[in-house]
Length: 354
Image 1 (cartoon, rainbow, N blue to C red):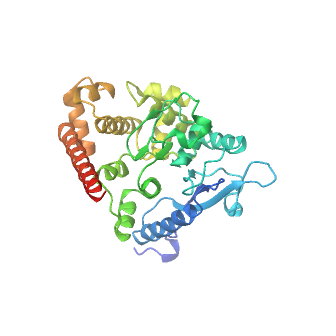
Image 2: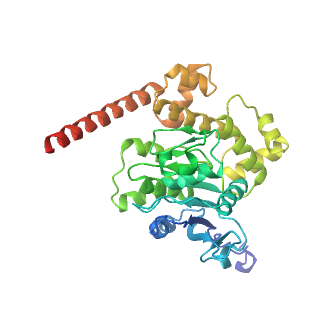
Image 3: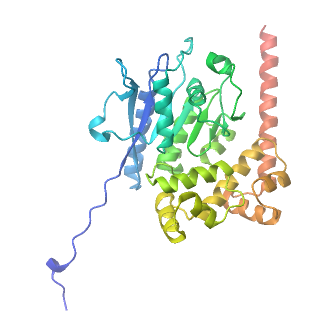
């Protein structure tokens, strides 16, 4: 029996992608072209994501600055789209070359703390990362900062963070970068966080960007979603990142979120796209990768991230990373030798030129 066309359920239109606000903070002396560069990358990424019919959020870059007559931070445009909501991502670029870093006002620092408490991803590049340190949100976290000499207000402060030699450090809700091409790598990592690695890679190829293997590892590492808006799950995520998910049970995660197990499982999957146990595994392996890059031995790293059974650690590392811990560590050692050799060659050439 033929069914009437009128009785068929109407086709649902695909939901329009949600807009994710990425706020570029313009403070005294900051690079003025930062928002323009990031906006162009976002537009290109939006086209790539639309062409591949990729679901998910789309990035919209806005500019924020201090109100000229007091009253805190304000958007330069976009208030009609986002209203009073705090941005999902806050980006602090570095200073213009030759500009001395000015003392950040308490209004900006308080706003950064409010954004972080509300679940915003904070990203600081060069001097912008020093502003995050001034705001007090880096305590106990691995970060990449430039020399503290660039910020007189930090010279007398005892560092509470864990310095890294990596150009780019992504620690979940905090993203810091410093060094050569730091802004480029931080921008690409933001694209990976919002759109996924495939879109980021496509944009990088279209722009013919050359990315060192060491930075490529950081760009492709596990990138959790913090911009989902579920405060209970966000609380659990921050707790997990603070302890690198070592030795935790499902009940521990429930306690940190204040949720019952079934509710946690459902909301965690909806917010992050992963179940809590898988999330913990990926977080621990990402931490292991960072420790290997810092020169850690396999047995030390395995124990540090909570795996007393090295064979279990090896199997999980192979499944997630695609290579064994031993081979991954050898690759890092080889990359260090190559960088050291290149540095020696440049030094010799400089001496000859002199």
